[in-house]
Image (cartoon, rainbow, N blue to C red; front, top):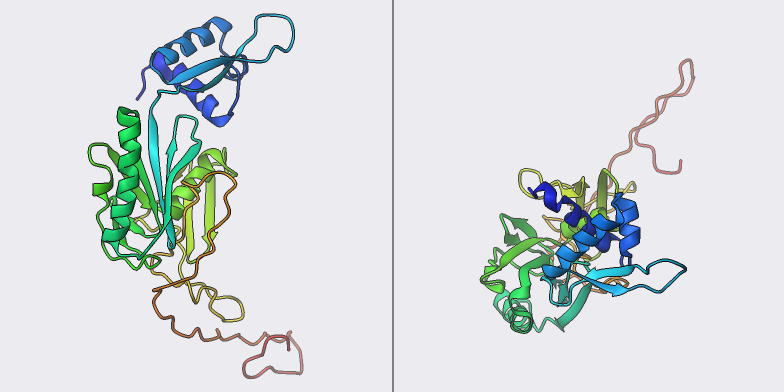
Amino acid sequence: MASPRWHGALAVLAEMRRTPGTTRAAVAQRLGLSSGSATDITARLRELALLAETPAAATGRGRPTTVLGPHPQGPVVLAVDLRQEDWRCAVAGLDGRPVVVGAAAHRDREPERVLREVGRAVRRARDRLGARVRAVGVAVPATVQHGRVAQSAALGWGPVDLSALAPGVALLVDNDATLAGVAEARGGAAAGAASALHLTVEVGLGGSLAVDGRPVRGATGRAASSGTCRSATGTCGARAARSAAGTSRSTAARSPGTSASRRRPTRAPTPRPCSPAPIRPPVPPSGGSRRASGAVSPGS
């Protein structure tokens, strides 16, 4: 837990992330800080290479304020998005804005081949950024348990260890739909909501439930994950996307505004036919002279 001395600093960094291009005066007003306190906090954050200030455009009389942003030599994380057809690696600073530094289509989906190519991109970024890289996050369309891939129908993987991607720094591996839901809950469409259900429908069906910005995982780590769904007509709503984990691609590591990947399902388990669910006959009104018998077809 942060000491009371740093509560204000953390709040300032959170505001900088929440509102890109915000000014010191605007942050002080939202947080209820005096001008002197805001100046003292931002000075400490500059000394720690966490925050930078640039002059804001003058809007009237009085001393001009400054625009807050991440320090150019501040800490960053590497975000890796493993998808069915390709992968992408991005760098993000304290403002949370990802900058893609590497991407390629899979030549094949063998885990060793994929991790070798992604590992090269991660090493190049770490060689360039040095100690500024504090962690590596990996979003993967898979069932993830205890930080390890248990299985991925989208990639055709069984158990895979991804620890070789981030030697010497913290590594976070999680299901792509889970990370997408957390991203929406903390800084997207569901920001500020006490609970949020996030669903993705692409090669597979994915989902996550976030409460107070934290994912609800359940006993096996698959809480709120989606699998095969049966529609009201009895047809299978996910024939090509059947997956025990309900996997899907992530939006957590993609840049804002990018479109969804147009991927085709491959190596998915062969689905069994979905039989129509029986429809119970209606109960006749009391005193009626007609009796319904047999199954009633839709629309009759």
